[in-house]
Length: 453
Image 1: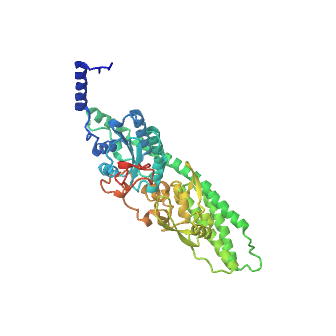
Image 2: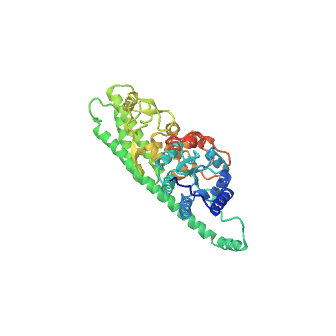
Image 3: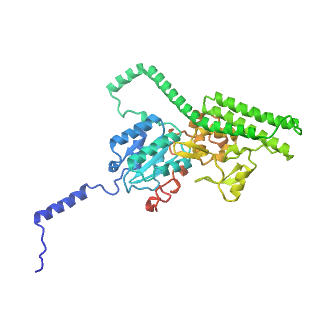
């Protein structure tokens, strides 16, 4: 016997119809996403914005804690959490134009994440590496890791607008303000002292990290002197050879003395300058003893200054950067010509061993002593160290002990991170394709990739 289909009762049908009507009436339309202007207005007041439709990704208390951490660090870091499907066309560029504030902008959109920054705040290479390092994490972990790493490697200061307390001024607020003015002097003095202590602590930490690397350099040069088979009184030694030898010994002693007296990271430049001079003196001594023409004064090998003076220039392309000519020693020139990797000087960082040009701002004075004057800009452009050294904040934190990088590179002016620049910014910093920095197209980004976001 064939089963008879069960029919719904009239009340059930009416209830279903009523539910459908209410859902249609009260569901937000597809075009009701939060506007870029609204997001920008919120970011001018606080560093973290969470869209109402994305609150399940980052709870309010977590967002508040993240915002407080950024404010305490006094850095222009902006984070927006948006729902899946939010329009991505020109999102970073439009948001940067709407806020008008120089900084680093990270956006979590659904389960995807990317970031853009003004180059005065963070270099493209540093930003790409940073984004790549947090891909695949859940929202809370990802945004916390991104924030922690960004604050360590970015320049600039927090915008003044984050210090606002509200829109309206009440009588109570005026009384409170008057009371605050009474203790303003003491408060300002306390703040200055705290900031000074923090800066001194950061400089000490940077110097301690540098000291390990510089001590390795000094030791390596001392070992070269120990291996040197030269006796000033030996037959065949002339005054020129003895002078070169004495210069090398003096450079070794000078380097040790300057390092012992170093109190700030920028003091390290004098140490590496002395080591560079000493190694050139040894190169001259070797040429004299072997009857070769004296070498021209060239910078040390870019990949590791311990290799000694360079003998030629070679084309080298850093990961994610543009090709450039760098000075290389004979051994590295041969390796590059054979298609092999050069022997690169790596140093310890919080993320393991890294090339010195991707190891953080403290290595600027160290590199400046080896590659002084106008040479550094062309060598380091596009690297983490190069991007950081080009910012005014870097000069404030680490001095100008890096070979006058900012002036020679033409970065002396412009807006520091956190300053109001309005729409006066380089759109190239906020556009371009994806993938270099672990962008949104990781597995075929679809309409989420391309050059729009």
